[in-house]
Length: 486
Ligand code: C2O
Ligand code: CU
Image 1 (cartoon, helix red, strand yellow):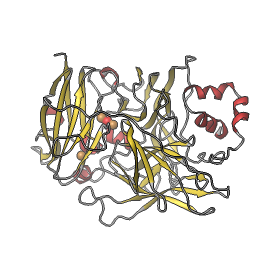
Image 2 (cartoon, rainbow, N blue to C red):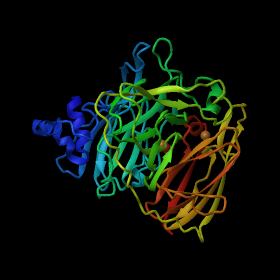
Image 3 (cartoon, protein in one colour):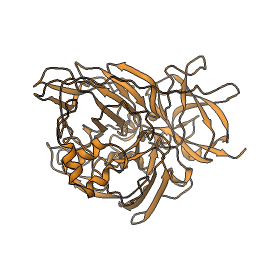
Image 4 (cartoon, rainbow, N blue to C red):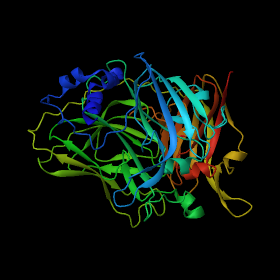
């Protein structure tokens, strides 16, 4: 299986998965190590589960996805853990297709509670977005639903439930969705590529999952973080790498609350993309920063000595009281340098035209991220002093450009996410920030204001926006944008 899955990965786009069924010839053709490639099986210790494509059309990926309770050995220092999983794995299988392809997901909910699948970052029709009741009801236990849409944009996206989200994501329901470019815009990318789903999970002495309400209101206010950081569902997994070879990492932060600030001591990252695909050009970064929900597309060229081990390291980030005090770095993935002769790095020759959103004439919208108490003295979070259940939708008409000014009135940062549309971040002067990029999530630091511009040019409906610390969203920090015909 590992050989086959590496064939799938290496042959890249689309119908590579046909190799699973059709053949040894393909296997034979790609086992010979190429001079500028990682060793065979380099990523076997980190590989995501694959999916069987039920559809012979090369531009349709048709799959079965089932959410169910399973018991998995998540943390080797504890007994196996009963989790929620898509197709029996945490994270769920990698959904892999190309821009313009159609995805059909036959979804079965075998959980003991209702759920949905939200396709985070995908610009798809409102009725496929997975926000409960907007417009479709959740999928009840034992029921099925077919998600069916075309994926318009290249990039890394992800999927997760949107009912009882903090608990369900905390129990293990999330997966990555990679949309490869269908043109030659990524032709210069290194062939050795891996998708890394970052998350955490709360596991107790007996291997049981933490109570999703642990810590009460204080737990909610802080946002619950698991005690074990996972990379592709594994605790401290390993990659086998050759010095000097450039690999491409596609990362997503799928944790329900945890921020990821990452370093690889001795090596810098060349960032080429984020939420909405490629950046205008590569950026050198010493550290990667991903708020919950965010993605990063980076090139990594380990160039330390053969035989050594490099550790991808999680660094504490101050997102408010309790997030960085008394916390230490954590090693989350090993890069084991093999004895192979060093290779030659791939130059990052990427570029993309991104036009700034024209904000002249844009409708200004401002909102405040707030906390309050309900009549029983319990914590409620919300927008403009009201929780989600009491908020009227915000309004926009098709074709309208809006500038949202989001002010965080709390003592903790909020990762702000809008469904269904990419936006651009604006500076204090109201001009798009350089480098231009497309995002669907942005950090709004404690007691600060951030501005975004968004063009609501298509796909009417009810679109959610919320804090992606899912404990905050569930406590009421969500809103709805009603996009209508003019
Ligand atoms: Cu990942 Cu409502 O979003
Ligand atoms: Cu928040």
